[in-house]
Length: 131
Image (cartoon, helix red, strand yellow):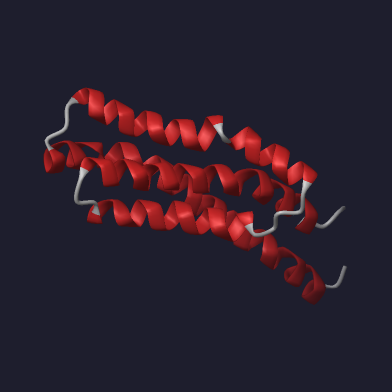
């Protein structure tokens, strides 16, 4: 494959890798933010645990549902939507004014992570050049 053509083929894969980095960083950032949330909202350890549970449930337990849906239907829009939800979700946690709003933001972040991964893996397979 010529050099110019090969670099063009890899651009979508690089974009997918950066998108994957963003979704995984948004998930990994939550534990770092927990002490801030505890002080800002005067939370108990139970409430902090519910924040972590909400993100883990929505990002991990619901993810197979998105995988099933992407196997059955062509849902290309899940990649940008999942990226947007996960990235913007973590970015907006600092603007939460209540515990309930914080939980809703964390849930939407988790849904974005869950939506991105199955379709992102499928897209990575489709844009990877065969050797």
